[in-house]
Image 1 (cartoon, rainbow, N blue to C red):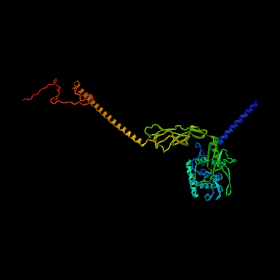
Image 2: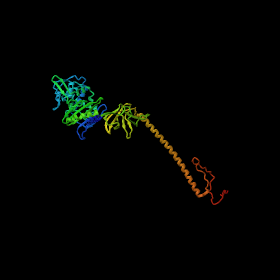
Image 3: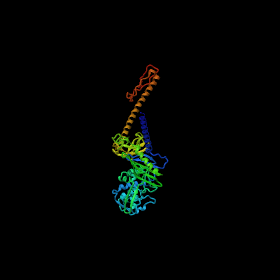
Image 4: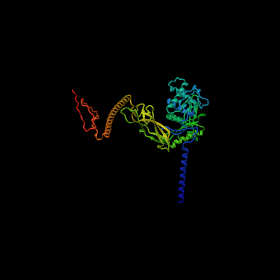
Length: 505
């Protein structure tokens, strides 16, 4: 019995130790990276399906991207070149190669396929391959095969900047297709994560960047190119099995850079960006930690559901006959990926209207700039995590809202004028009646005051007076007879003596 108890205790202790070790390991390797606030590093972790920012340090700060620029060059090549086996021949464009560049060791008058050039671009990080691609793809973009290589190069760089704006790289400007240092060539960790997500839409891009070796034979030589991304190199201490390739980069000004990605068991893709790293250890170590954190310590939350009324606002200038308010909704669930410790209560939302449709008044109401139809895109819903901006999604109208027309305005103004006129007339009538009533009351008050004074003076012998007004307050006219003159009453005698005077003949 004692032996059995000892065995049970030993097994229990062993299991407890294993669990503790697993928890400690999990906490060490799946925690979000911690860097000092004043660090010049640029770190960013991004989940594309919900456009979620999972981690950011200097995420929106302008930095030099170095050779991670080549992700855009590869993506545009895949967008415009449908046949990657098509051959091109190098030429004078190689004279553009900056001194000190990393290269794929291309020769002039060497014939390669677009596929070869993509591998030469991404694995050995060939600036020469980037230039050749820019000059040839630029001709395709311009739809003019006869333009010079210099013009084609400019067309390609212009397209890089155009595409950057289209996909939401708001703080990026490209000056070349390879990333060699130029003070006017910059991006941000956030923008580079967005770029990697865009490039991921091309299946062949993933095939190229997930490779660690490529060999091709041309009319000049046999090229053997190896990749530099330690995240996908087996045997590297930074190797991370779920990681995908993407791109590394380095210049003295940019530091050591890497854009990496990984995919979890549910098919969710995470993008990690490290810019301006001073060491290789930080370059790949931080990228690996970011990807592990995304895969293991984040989960999806639904903040608002599709079709729900998120906001309801009154409108001042609705069309005549319409009542109610316009309602704001989203056409798909507002979902986010965030740390597993967060709940829906950590998130808040706000509505940002589009100036195309709505204008804010001094109150909580809105005025229509244009009529709104159901499902029109009328602005954005901004999502905040603990008060800090997290992401935004498109907002749509849930109902039709028609703006007041010119005809409605004329009718409304006419009705207002008629109403005001009626009010003025009513006011005049009431005022007249009030003055009349007040005048009658004034007369009655005067009469009462006079009678009161007479009673005070004469007592009960107050002489009777003919009323001056009737029951309606109208003045009674007294008709006097010609020969009937009223005579004064002699107050000293009881009887009033009259004497008929006759004229002597």
